[in-house]
Every structure is written in C-alpha cells, then in structure tokens.
Amino acid sequence: MTDPSYHGQILTLVNPIIGNGGVPDTAASDEIGLSRYLESDGIKVSGLLVLDYSNEYSHWRAVKTLGEWLKEEKIPALYGIDTRMLSKIIRDKGTILGKIEFEGQPVEFLDPNKKNLIAEVSTKVKIPFSLETLLKYSSSFCCPT
Image (cartoon, rainbow, N blue to C red; front, side, top):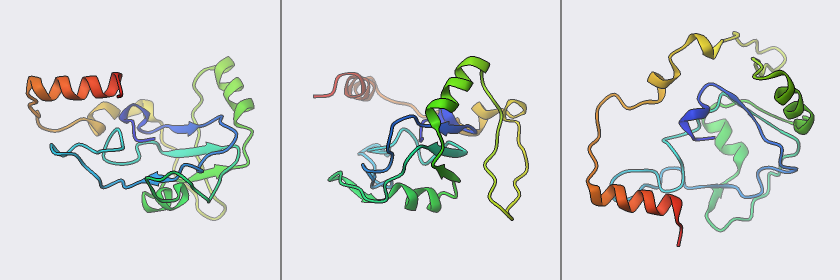
C-alpha cells in the first residue's frame, strides 16, 4: 500500500483475511531518515478492497489497526468484496478504472491515466547516497538476515 508504484490505484487484495498483522509505527525511521517499515512516507493507494477484514492484530511490531491507519490517511476501503472473482475479471479484461463512493458522499471520478503520477510520488530534489549506504540498503532488501 505504501509502494509509490501503486499511487492513484485501488488495491485489491485476494488474501482471505486482511488486517490481522496490524500496522507498525509508521513514523519510525532509520539513521538516514528512510522509513523503517514502509516503502515510502505513507499510503499511496487511493483505495483498498478486501474479502474479509480483522480489526484484531497480533504482530509484535503493530501499534494500530489497519482500519485506524486508513482513517488517519483518509483512504476509503471496503470489505466483503469477492476479490478473487474481481481479480479474475481484471485479469481477463485488463486494468479497469473505478472509484469507491459511500452513500451520500459523492466522489469525483479521476482518471489516473491523465495525471503525471511519477511526478506526484518522486522527490523534488536529488538525494545523494554513498556507495556504503547503497550497498547496505540493497543487500538488506534482497537478502534479509
């Protein structure tokens, strides 16, 4: 959900139950300011669809529920959706535009294909990294110990 490549998309998860892992401290960062647990500085998806949702979490690093985090970031979400069937439809038909709208709360339809999404999630200034930092982070992402 925090991967910038999902920016502007409604994410459909096909796992049978979502939320039981909870959400870690989203403000935690490392010594150079990168998020310790997230791919970016917050949720990048525009919405979330799941089959079943658990408001109870059990992961030892969790500090809040997925629902609490989605509310904080003002991200709409729905559960009770047959996400496996939806994913089959998307697989067969290709990407489908959509929106999540709650009764009495109309939402403007936005076509993400008409926006420069890369510019919206990219840094505005160059951030130099040393070779040592690059090696540390690339090895920690690909080869956890």
